[in-house]
Length: 600
Image (cartoon, rainbow, N blue to C red; front, side, top):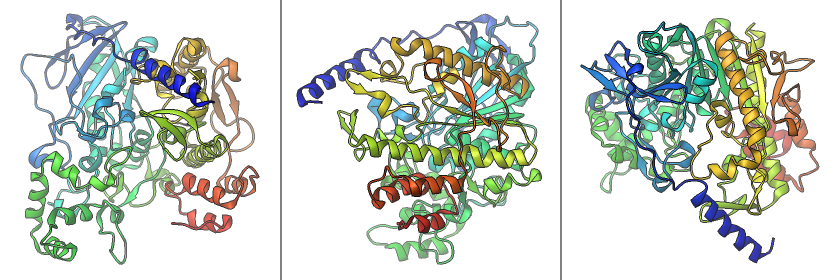
């Protein structure tokens, strides 16, 4: 590509991003639809009509976790008098705004949200008020975003609800340091308040709300499937191993998730603890930052932390405004915001042992049917933001610096993700006697747009399957570059099949041929010989088909060691560390020795 061609293509790309992918006038606010009147435990509520669905937005499922309720288990939302109009989303939970979490692009990198954020949204097939409620399957969506960014308003459940007669619920939960913060000063004797897992407790409280109220929307509280992506999938594993989740869910779909979690020591201890060092942004490190100043160094702050009454320290933490709290994490801001440890194995809300090990014990987790899956090119959504891998201008990617090495990073990163997100947990669940289905999503038909190879840059990247599940293609400013007329026929057909499989699973706890019975049969995972997982792709790229192209951990490390596409050991070790370093795998040191790679 010549400089002149690159410049011309860049201008075209910028023009397309500004015209085809946003900039339209905002839609007028919806009007309340009297036929959507419903009676909840909290009071009467009315929503609006959206195509063939009724929608209720911004329903509080818990009290605002503010003031003395910060870093406590959720409390019931207050009742209201009269009829509440549920016509707009509730506030998002505090976070460092990121486009990957559905934030407006002009807010990127800024503090965004409000602590009063525990709201959910309901999408259901239209029916008149007072009509027979029916008992429709319920699908509760848990958004991803590293447990630091994201919000429920980024997802529209109306197309899925209308297409397959399901009730879809999307929700907010506390994120980052407000969702996960474990420290002894917050322990006032209540094990839930002191657990540190406020985000998980929010999810469980929302599921309790579903049990109590979903029948008013036509949903069946005995058929609740949770589905979530990335950190949302990890949170689903947390729900499954939590003793507090009994009776709250009956099926689970984990999209690009995993079983990684943080020990209580890593979440809580200082980094220089001699026996169990904490994470760089553990709660003790944050408290030391709060106590320290120009006149009080780390040693002084440590002394204050050890001698000041716990109640006084807890009050000082709760008295911080949101900006002051997030400022304490300022060095930890990255693509997904503050780097506080999340999903903490506290021993009460969540078990002390690793989640993957809990799956070996049928008494240690909630035994429900599951779907597990990953995308073929998971890491590319992160690599496309990295100047190490991609030439960018004005925030937009232009081309890969080294296509060969770029694809090696993506290939092994995705295989490692498949290993920890599908192969290993599915095999253990199957051995425990549970039905499990697995998939790999392969769609990569973005094509070339204005000379930019979007299929090569993104392909089947992390998170791009979500619009296919919801049947809704608005993902922000670049929507028109990813989803356009050129790929519409295959894309919409694949989306239709995925929606049918997901809804079929919610209805029958078996995806089968989909809710409409028209897709290829999705056989359960067997982990041995024969077909084990479903490829999800368009007919032009091989279609939907069963496969067993999965590797064990040993096979994947051997493949990495023998791969002659690497030019030297430096490349091999760099790809190895990028693929395995952050997976929480205890085999990291052994694998590094086998590959002659030095750990940082």
